[in-house]
Image 1: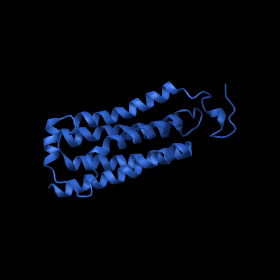
Image 2: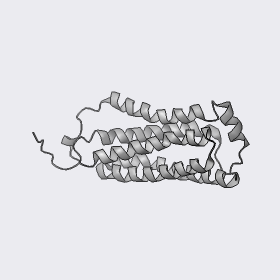
Image 3: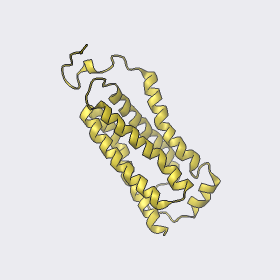
Image 4: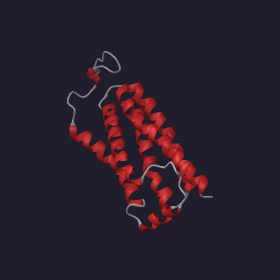
Length: 175
């Protein structure tokens, strides 16, 4: 049975109730990517702390205490955006948008093992560049489904531009 939909973003295409448990699941999954970085990074791993502490870092790099609250906020915003896309049940671009979201989240989670475990600054730079392109794609696909979801991803994209610059500078300063 076909359900008539007035337009690709009409209200009839969305779940009628917000389903806050599903939103919580999206937030928990997004925060999981951050937990990987936290567990493998200098905050909890003595080996990573020693190695990372020995690296030359750019003078303009923000203090490390900023990273956890900033990333937590960004993970919350991206999860909210993905949840809004998920609620667009009948939009034909929903599947591609969610695929782009999960791909960028996977790349986000992959950065810490690549950077801290393998201690490969160059490979970490490659992952951050791939992540930047994946987030740009996600923003584009989210925008096709729901503009507000794409807007929620923009702070993440902007911060990733800074992250790529930091990763590049660390790579350049530590041959």
